[in-house]
Amino acid sequence: MKRSNFKTRGKTLSAKKPMNRTSKKRRNYRASDEGKAAMEYMGLVKQLPCCICNAPPPSDCHHVIHDRFGSRKASDLDTIPLCKKHHQEGTDAIHNGKETWREKHGPDHSYVEWTKRAVKEFL
Image 1: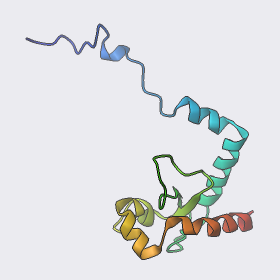
Image 2 (image 1 turned 180 degrees about the horizontal axis):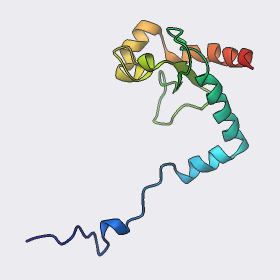
Image 3 (image 1 turned 60 degrees about the vertical axis):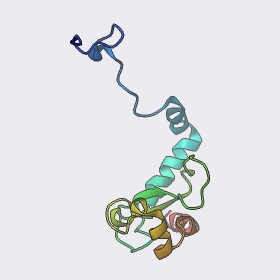
Image 4 (image 1 turned 120 degrees about the vertical axis):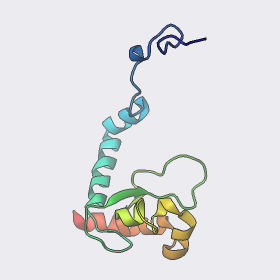
């Protein structure tokens, strides 16, 4: 038996609504004063050198992941600057081996206070 024109419960695929890139909750947070301040802070973190190898900016703004319980993302204020090599691309990247990265560089949350001081000095 042949399926007809990719119909899904009476609707064609082209009639489906596109998926939202961000949730309403996140859009509301970003529109709030607290969200705007957090986005500004993360923009400043991106202008810092990598906290591991001191590679020049722009850096990626990494939300800390070590010693966290649950699936909720860390606060936007608990971020550290990492170069691409130490963040996502490369053998030393934290997202390619969380435990290996911890053994080599320590827990990522230990760099948060350094980052906050550096942002304060940057202003």
